Image (spheres, rainbow, N blue to C red):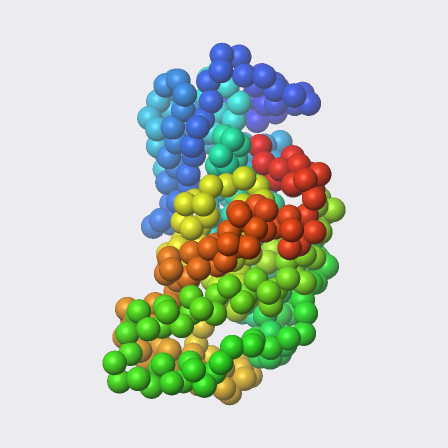
Amino acid sequence: MKTTLKYLALCGLLSTSVAAQSGESITQAQAQYEKQAYQLTWSQSVTSPVDILVSGSSSVMDAKVIAEDVSASNFQWQPDNSEQRYYFFIKPENGQPVMTTTRLVPLEGGRNFRDIGGYQTTTGKTVKWGKIYRSGALSNLTADDYTIINELDIGTVVDFRTTTERSSEVTKWAAKQPEMISQDYEMDFDMAELGKVLKDPNLSREMLESMMTKMYPSILDDQTENYTAMFDSLVEKDSSLLFHCTAGKDRTGISAALVLAALGVDKQTIIDDYMATNQYLDPRSLLPKEDEHMDPKYAAMMKFFASLPEDIAQPLLGVTEPLIKSAISAMEAKHGSMLEYVKQEFDVSDKDILTLRSKYLQ
């Protein structure tokens, strides 16, 4: 087995710039964690054996070789420590290594905590892993979770929750202290209308979707201050950024759409990222626990949602496409595109867009 330092030197990875010798490249790579093992898959421009390295950080300089001359387009690896986040580097014989990792960060008390890296843009670039994270509430994170989070180099946390939500599920941050961005407000939607819909004996998924698609665009207005501060931080800081709400699906889902649009990711991929909440969010995590001091009205509401048939409750406890499409349509109606909406509404200049893409794309 090749020693890591010697291997990196031979690959040219210790120099400041690396040129592929024959244009071989990994065009797509994915990592899934299933049954206590990582499943890696990839495709490349030229079929040739690859070497696989693993690291506990996003730096290839810390990586070690775990497989050589793999001729298949997939590989399985079982770690000694399943409670650590791993980054994988797939290196073609005559090309540059490409990094991949799991989208969901393996946190015991995490709620829909995931990395928005790895997506391709319309120009063929890829959003960097390990730079921008999205999540639900952080109140249940454990000491072991914070050991992982400390390695993520999060310098800014943007909390989209209301004042009541923040006091109900308190964030007790126990990693390196980041800048905390939030604002005092309460949700301005008609609870009486929601109650009327929920009490209708003919309640259906379509009725809930109709109500929520009317509400969704208002999130953009409610969060203008937070979104503006978030983009300022992304432009100005070099550390990673985390944004979150309670479930990590609605306000956070729109935020992810805005960031990915600014980076040049296409609309369908943005929708797919939004819909991935149905894969990563356990609705049971939204229910109040015995030892939590959750706002009584909010706790009662969540318990009622959980009592509804799963399909009917989907827009409330998960996500559906009409919701994000209603927000996207509102952005396009006002400014022509999501990108233009970001620029006009959150004071993001063309220069800022170039800065964002140089920092967060590869």
